[in-house]
Image 1 (cartoon, rainbow, N blue to C red):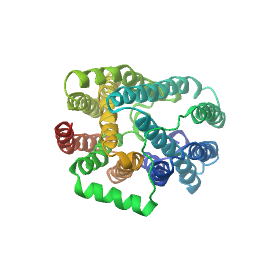
Image 2 (tube, rainbow, N blue to C red):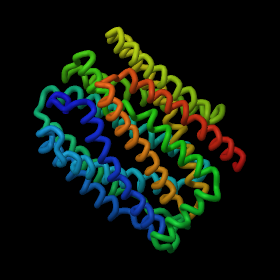
Image 3 (cartoon, rainbow, N blue to C red):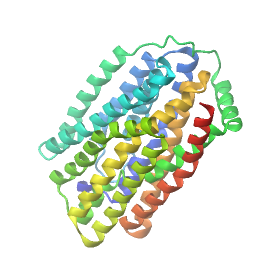
Image 4 (tube, one colour):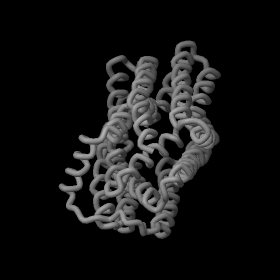
Length: 370
């Protein structure tokens, strides 16, 4: 998009606004909890997300067209349903003591995909036309998706119950009103992603604008931090088991924040070496914090038997809302400040630290209850 003359604030807005399409995941979560139906939902999600991927190539131009919003929205919608139902299924079929291991496996494989995608993308993107690049990605996506759908195991645990969607939502709101644990988790999952994702959609435009990166170099920055995130994810799980779960989340987030500060410094003095130093710290910090954070979310969901997937879907919506606000706020900051990336990274860092407040109380209550 940047190489086709999209402004950075437009990129953040047009890739961030469609995140609201993910809200539909709550409906599918309800039917999984109430009817234990999963495979047809996964097939539907795979279909609409594939349509979204395929159609994106036709809406890169003209700049700022509504077609791209719809294409990206379909992809977000389908992938969010897939993620929520697979996570819910794994939470249901696993015992409480196994969820830390499940969280680690989920995160390692996801980050492996991110890292591998970054590596392959950085190699292929400069060499082939964008439409062919997307089509190749689509073939891989459908293949892996079908394997996942066909291999999914139906939960044998007694989690299923009969309730209509309105009753399900009512029970969810009662739970949030009467229990501080899911309430505080909701606040954390809404605030923290603003600090984690504000740079997500504009980092490539940032290095193109400030450091004049070309197609070959843009892929390398994604490969670096995702690879480091993958490498350091097991360390976060190990630290959380040996100490307390808040320790790796806190220190990992702090490393990521230092990385953001280095982004600011690098852009002020035009230093690519400091930029890569920031990327290294950001990747390491994200890896250390990510596994324990997922484990904590799964454990909180598993504490409320009849609302496992609905609560997981709701938490996903809060994360979605945080990502949405991060993208829109990032777009507004860039538009108002004429692409002041330093100010954006500073605001992002502040949100990370604000997120520590509800996280601290979540962990205190969870440890007291268990």
